[in-house]
Length: 174
Image (cartoon, rainbow, N blue to C red; front, side):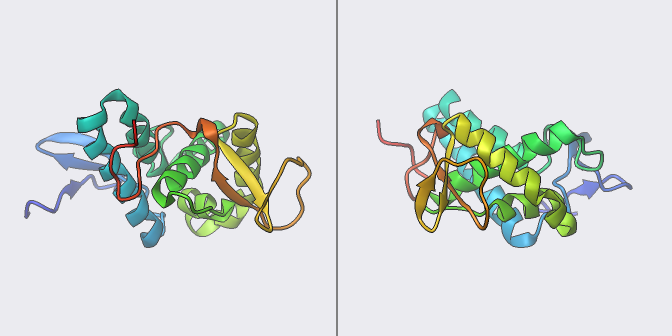
């Protein structure tokens, strides 16, 4: 085994590092989203060194989005799925800076091949986050406040998103 490889338990649910078991990343996350989520996790870990506890929210959200914390990805509960969708939305918004995301991005990360089944829940979670000021919901580039939305929506960061790195993954401005 090289330094970059780790052992997995027979069921694939855990990795073993130096004899200690850690929950593995959900293998159903598409590679592009997994790469983005892992990058956000690493950015958060770097920023914890410079920004302390303020940046820990990035690490927590990324770990939940990857399935490494929260309800086990192999035994999802309704609330655990909602929590993971919310963490994924927050992580992707931090990762993409000023860009918007689609609810399907979060659904794909949490649902894998069955992501379409999570679309209604992902939209509901986005509306819950909007009610808390964490995100804003847009249609055709305009912020909308309706609760009965028809058609495609996009999600953008709201004022209450909390800690956000500056572009390039550096500490936020003071």
